[in-house]
Image (tube, rainbow, N blue to C red; front, side, top):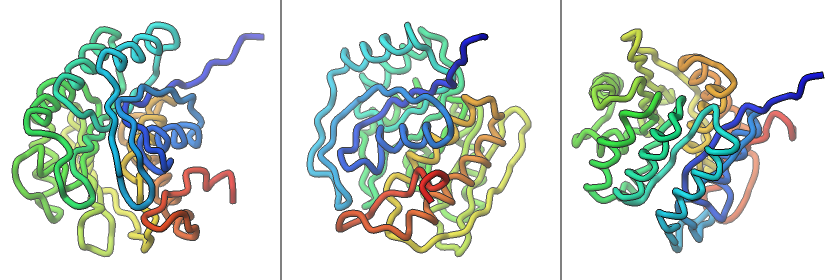
Length: 271
């Protein structure tokens, strides 16, 4: 009898002590989508449903050591990348991904806080555009993040489609611009498939809930997991969106903490 193998997904991101976003959300999404999750932690945060009260960056050389430990022994079928706090870290992560010839990279360019404040300096944004975006099979910016990458406001469906094509020109293979910040009753995302030169609109219900912490992390992780399982980009994005929509819908019934709670990552198994 032959041994079984896992579909392996690595997250490179910060830790959320409250468990709703970051590394913790990524690992939950991997497991819920039937993948074996691994982590490279880039920063520790003191964080809960009310916000972030402290950030402690992990030394860059130790981030590199974590990547070596995982990639040299276990290997990966897909990688999800979250927020990276400095140009030096971005260049280090990109170098390791090239060194190990990693494929199926999903980049969630976490750069803007819910308040609208930028979380990366301008030189870090430029490093992201120069070193990591060209390696990505898919990038998944929301509207504020797309605005930072392009240096202009992005709002409305027509602007989203234009932004997605302009982001594709930065060198990634596919782009998903998320429409959660739109004021429409429908939550529409715009997917551009570079190889096919196709634009796909993915509509979804907009769910009234305060439990929306970690939605971006969870969606990009679910997409990476689906890629690890063998889905093509369009199928992975569609299934990822179905998963996050259900996680938001079921999570709306819960109360955790005094602020914005998490989505229900294990809705399929707990209910």
